Image (tube, rainbow, N blue to C red):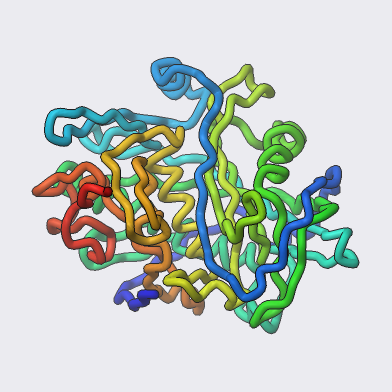
Length: 386
């Protein structure tokens, strides 16, 4: 586990919705049927996932949708490693062509009621004076550096993930921005049959199957919210101390994915689910999670790999990756490496993130000051994975 503190100055922007207003509107949705998930038995190791886009829409058609405004703005780039050229798609506008428009981002607080465990409830809008004494998970997410400005000495002022992308392409555009424009929906209350609930160092953590949850997102939750969520927005489904399992394996704290949204003629729809963690449980095995560190990971990976299709030379044996991996998932090489920043009286945990140049073995890199990651953890580009 690596932890460092950053020196910064802070500017807070106005929030578009408050936790209190979200609590006033609670919508009850159909129950999720989840397989029973196993007890963790002390194995609280954090993982992150990217579920493949299975829509089959050719890239050129998705880019046409982006140009027409029927999905989020996207741009394409290339990188050549030795004799092989890799193509990639990212959110926003090509840094060489100027700053990106703000991306409408919808925060959706998910209140989960585990019927199989006496109605144990996990609600990001509920007060938790013991484990989250600074405020509710929703309020602290809204106030976080994901959606509000901070100033980092080396790259300037902006939202954290926007600053990451500026630093990523610093030699191309020193003023680059790709910012999120957040709004918050009312609470979506969902019952869960199955899953699991257990005690942690602070409070409880619940788990449910990622396949059951993702199927619910695409086929129940998205249609129910089609009046507010469109493919031209980025929805974030916010959990509080709830993790996901994959074939019984734990613990996935966040993921991003995409599908063809049938409510909008099959347009390309991206989305993410992230846990706000206050359990103090996920601190072993080289990983650490707290408050918005999970959201940092997922928003950055959505930004740089929105179609979960950006290929890279094989890399691995770093971060959460024990073997070899070949995609542009910028959080995975540094899962568990976080820095702290203070904003509005709260100490937030932000994950270090790998730059494009690290994956594509670029020397010199396109990034700030020759770095290969946001906080300088990576000092040379990825080595060939065997």
